[in-house]
Image (cartoon, rainbow, N blue to C red; front, side, top):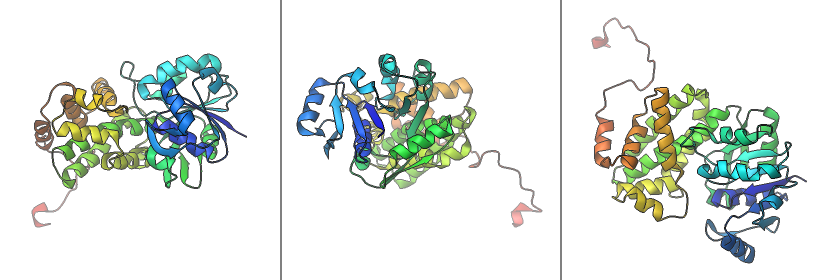
Length: 344
């Protein structure tokens, strides 16, 4: 029987623990906060991050990192992206080289501009690493609502092992060898989701949001390809799929945060009003810095960065985007020679 440890009891970590335990696997769930630990053990419910969903008896709850890491075949990192480095540093002495590390966090580190798998590899260079990403709201996966996701690794056998382990009749897992694209798609769509929320908060319509989403995936792919990703990855679940669900659902923290900003709240007010991590805020910084470092044009990201960190007025940012120099929709559009285009 495969043994799995989930390190981090946020909504997505808890949802994965529930899904894995529903298969009959032995699952340990590490909870950092002792008060939350007591509540979960007493009620069998994560009242803070995933209320109204009961945890199966197969999930063993603990605050002991060593206990959670020892003897498990798979270590699932369910902490927010900004905590991944500290988490891996704290657990590495408890791990052996055979354990597979699966990262759930979607982000790009601010200081180093590293993807999460790169951060993990710094500390665990000999461990097989996989990432799980896709259009998955924790609230729906935990309630066994049909969903699909993608797992990626440098090693095909590792991706297929995680695929087999995580797959259920209601949670379909695909593999994708493009770990760069899978990670970047999952991280960068949160930036566009902030923009979609801001648009909603301003009272704009479906046309506006659809334009932001469609041009947003172009920006994401443009940066991704420059960093070594495959274009087709951004047409899949971890790209446009994740973008759609994050930009349109009220489950999305990033969209909700954007709505509040569009309605006039400051970033500080928005972040202080929730216990959840709004990953898109930090990722906007990283995406903006990467675009400047690599020399990639990302106008939507640049305007969202300005709204979040440079006190741009949100309506002016919309005007800035709408009045940019005209351009083609398809990049590298070939010239078409016509006999007389006026008569066409």
